[in-house]
Amino acid sequence: MEPILIFGHKNPDTDSICSAISLAELKNLTGEAAIPCRLGEISKETEFVLNHFGMETPKLLKTVSAQISDLTHVEKEVISCEQSLKSALNVMTYEHFSSLPVVDKNNHLKGMIHVSDIANAYLGIDYSDLFSKYYTTYENLKEVLNGEIISGVYPTGKITGNLKGVSEITTIAPGDIVVTTSMIDTIDELIHLGAKVIIVCCEESDIIDSRESSECSIMRVNYSLFKTIPLISQSISISSIMGNDNFYSFKTDDFLHDIKDIMKESQQTNFPVLTAEGQIYGTIRSKNLINFTRKKVILVDHNERAQSVDGLHDARILQVVDHHKFGNFETDEPVKINAETVGCSCTIVLDLYKQAGLLPNKKVAGLLLSAILSDTLLFKSPTCTEKDILAAKELAVISGIENFEKYGMDMLIAGTSLGDKTPMEILNIDMKEFSMSGLKVAIAQVNTVDVNGLLAKKSELEAVMNELNNSRGYNLFFLVITDIVKSGSLGLVVGSHPSLVERAFNVKLDNNTAWLEGVVSRKKQIVPFLMAASQGI
Image (cartoon, rainbow, N blue to C red; front, side, top):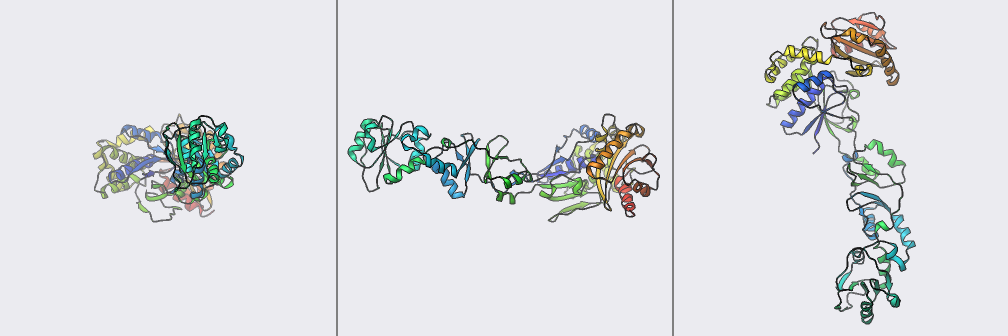
C-alpha cells in the first residue's frame, strides 16, 4: 500500500516542515504508513532546527499528479523475440490488440510487432529457403504444429536445415526437415538420407510405426499436408520480421497529463511502458488512462491550492491540519479537518498525539517546540495564544530544553542571515499568493535582526518584485521585513495598487516603504487588513 504523503505549503517555513515530520511520525506509530515531504528548499532557521535534533530533511515533492504507475490497469501481454508469429497472433486475437511490444530474454524492449508486419511477411514467404531466410527454433515448430513425437530424440535450438517436401527427395541433405504423409517406405528412405525431422501429416487413426534411428525424429501432426505447410510458416520467430520502425514508449513515472496528447495524436494504439531499469512494465491504451489510484495526502499548515503541491486535483486529501483561514478549499469527498485559532500548526499536532494516547519522543518534541517558537516569534506575535505557550512549556520538558527562550532566539537569529542570498531567494523564503477583490497579491515575509542590511539590496529587490509582478500577473507585491527584536516590520511595496497598503495600515509610503509598528503576523495583522482595504477598490 502506498504511504500517505504529508506536506506543508510551498516555500516552507519551520512550522510547515516540523508539523509534516511530527504528524508523519504519529501516523507511523498508529499503523498508517506516512512520509513527510517538503514543497521547496528549507530555510536556514529550519536547517538549524533539523541539525540541532539530528533529523533528516524531508524529501522534495514536486507534484502529486497521476503517473502511469498509478493506473489501475496496465496491459501486461508482451511477446519474446524468439517466439513464433502464431504465438503473437494468438495474443493479439485474444486481447484484440493490433500490436505488441517485443522483448529479449532480459525483458528489455526490442521493438513493436504489428498485425500488418505479420501479414506482409506471409505474402513474401518463399518456402524453399524458409529456414535459411527466417530464424526459428525446433521448439517453435513443434508448438505451432502441436506435434506428437513418434520416435527419435526431437532436437532443440535453431533450425539450420532446409524445408523440403517428399517430392524433392533427390535434393534432401542431412539436417533437412521433410514434410510427408504416412508412406512407410518413403519415411525409411528419408531417415537413410539424413533428415533431421520428418513431419508426417496424418489423422490420429493412422498408425505410424516408430523407427530405431534416434538421429531422426518423426513427428506426427493431425493436419493435412496442405494445412501443415502454411502452419510451418507461422513458426518463424518475431525477430525475423521485426523492422526498425519508430514508435512511442513511456516510463512508469511519466505523468498522465504529459502523455495524453501524444497518445491522442499518434497513429499508434498500443504504447509500451518501461521501468526505471529499462525493463518492460506493460502496455497502455487510451482507455487505460481513465482510472488511476490517487495518491493519499495530508496537508499541514495550509489549505489553499495555490500554496500547495502541483497536481493536487489528482490526489486524495485525507486530512488538513491548519491554523490559517480557509480560502478556496474544495474536495470531492469528505475530509478530516483539524483546525484551530492558535499560533502554530504544531500546537494542533501535539493535541493529535494526546488524542491517540501518545506523547512525542524527545526529538519530535523539539521539532514541535521549535515551530511554536518560530511561528509566534517567541510568543510576541498577536497570533500567539495561551494554548501555544502551554504547549511550548510542555514540549520543552519532553525535549530536555531548559532555557527554551534562549534556544528560540538562537534559532531565529540563525534563520535571519540573508547576506548570501539573492533577491529572488529572499523573496521566496516565505512567499504566498492571495486573491483580494479581484486583485492578485503576493506577500513575502522575512524575519531578521538587520533590517538596514537587507535594505541595502532595496533596488535589486524592487527589480525582482517588478519582474514577478509582470511574469505572474500580480497587481501588488508586498515584502514584509520583520524585525524580531523591535517586534515590528518594514513594508516594501511594488505594484499598481500601493494605496492598498496605505489604506490598510493608515501609513504614507516613502520611496515604496513604510514602518508598521507592532506588525509581525502576516496571517493576523497583514492579510485581514489588506482584505478589508481591498473592498473599497
